[in-house]
Image (cartoon, rainbow, N blue to C red; front, side, top):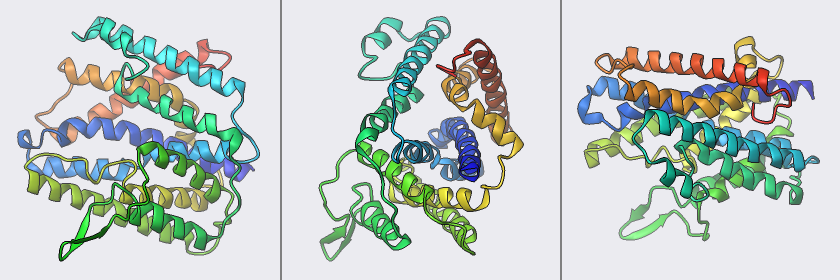
Length: 331
């Protein structure tokens, strides 16, 4: 069990860093006409390598709650309080530092999160609600591969349509609709892989290779979309897309096989404060971007600066919140 906790902590820390990365690079990806192509390419590669962050969080939650243990009252209380607390913090930020209407943000709080990153808490609630009904069985690697190929690629509605002589052969329509299906599937596969024996020779190397190939394919596909459309498109960035799907499972296998001996010191701190970091980071990035505290004239340096400043500020806020929140309700 200690080994399982170690790889989960390491993976959670990595995913937290990836979340900051994708929100740091967003401005450059969506403003391709305002920057040089080398700078856009760097942002594209960084973002492509980090798209798995949200699927990883769902897989960790699935591993924890889609087994013998399910979400209980205290877990629902915690996620509810997190939604209330971080929404309140976001509303305060909007009131103090933006021209956005606080009243309009509040009126639609149950339909649209107050700040864009808070959507994750709503989606995670689905995992919690389903957890008492689900206990994932142990499956073989062959079964896992079959699920990956069929649900992740062949029947994935986010797979780019493929035609031959007018006949469309991908994706196959199994009437799968909505990203929530894939968020739950991530949870199921997180549990299945989590209890699977992955200490066989070559698993880590193979997983790393597949992850790298998926990242390259996501980056190349996104560059192709930019060339065709003349503007950024998230076709290959989708959390439920086939390449992100395969990359996320590969990273989970890699972490479980290579990062299960101990929790790495830096990742341990980030993992321990990941909830607070997630809750605060988007506000920090928005503040830096909208108050002239970034350095867009030097894109690469700016990405490094915004990432580092956001991580430092978010971690500092998370540490302070954790000291006040003795019952760990929102930290």
